[in-house]
Image (tube, rainbow, N blue to C red):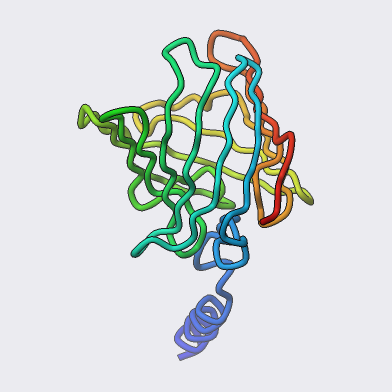
Length: 186
């Protein structure tokens, strides 16, 4: 009887503590971002992005993204987020398409697993481990089939949880970064 009461109390404590039962997502604040907000960013490889918030489009919240400075040429893409501000799809140049199921895990605190698919129907399952200290997120990732974590990525958050700066050391040892240079409110 004593073990039953202990188990019942532990079960109730677990159910009443939502943080322990599900991971917290640091999603974009899609319900607060004003429609028409424009985010300018640049990356270490010279690529420039101008993302314009379009607001809710059906079941997703969308950005139109103008990409320039790529060796393959300039193009317009679409980023799609769910109601919690988690990226679920990228529709790029021509037929290029990426999808994350259930969502892109890079901004979910604790452990998270997603399946990534591209236009060639290649699917990979990724495992993430994310920590937050103030406005800084640090993420580790690996393919589910691997045991070794890849180099950490750091992300600094800004208004509306916009990713103001991202830095990573790639598997070949080169460093890559992207930073927001300007945010224009409508």
